[in-house]
Amino acid sequence: MLEAVGGSLREWAGRATLIPGGYPRDLVPLRHAELFACHSYPEGDPERLTVIARLLTLWTMDDDVSERWGVGEAHAQAVLGVLRGTSLPGADPYLREWASVGAALRDADMSEDWLQLFFGHLETWYASARHPERGRREALEQYWRRRLDGTGAVPWLDLLEYVHRRELTPEQRNTEPVRNAYVFAAEDYVLAFNDPTSVERDARQQVPNLCTLVADERSITPAEAAAELARQHLLRVRRRQAEVKTARRTHPDLTWWLDRACVHHLGMARAHVPDRSRYGELQTVSGSSFHIRVITS
Image 1 (cartoon, helix red, strand yellow):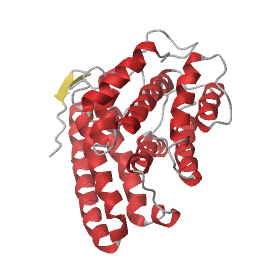
Image 2: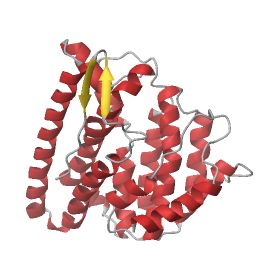
Image 3: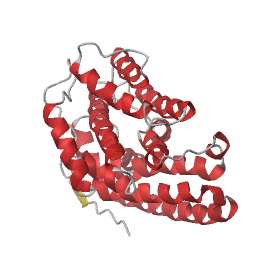
Image 4: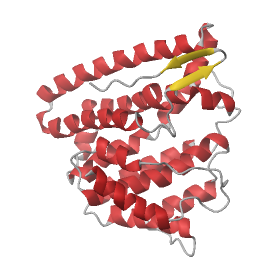
């Protein structure tokens, strides 16, 4: 599966326009998006996993831009418009790639409710990405809440229903086990992947980072802050395991989704490990160095 999706993705990337006009030419598209698609949704078919890999490749360009300059409102609305099919890409080759992803999602026999949910979560992310991260000055708690409210992990959890061709009802999505899964997805991404693996880069670019904010607030080294955040993450993982165990008994109709959400979290961890181009293992900040090891078992 990984080879099939990777081959299709490389063929597409070789001819697609992945950097929109006006973006810096030094931006590097995400390599090996098939790792994230196949590890996070291991039961998916090649066609839908390829759509997800393309979506992730395109989206990470805006994610990188959001940290440095912020994503412009006109650009965000253009992307969301072609995804939803409410506007056309015209002659823009970059928007045509987004439009093809949107068409694949809309033609996949998903309900209008699910499409609105997914596109709405992407719109929330774009709203949070309008203001650049670079140069921000904020307190630890303010940063934490803002990052959780705008994390890109949320729409990727929506895609479980697309991959498995099985939707939750609105009532099921509003249950405590499902709501908790979305909260955990956001916390997991910030605590385990995004911030600890980008301390050095964020320091160079003057972008706020949970590790450095914790270090500054508690007058400890970044390495000690990373260790503390790792302990907090472990506690959250154990709490989530207990929640899922209970939810399997109290909400048996959700077992299929809860189990696959757990596989999704694990797959995200596995996908981050080999992607050294974006997530280096060695971090060195202010004279303190530490290694990050992702444990997936």
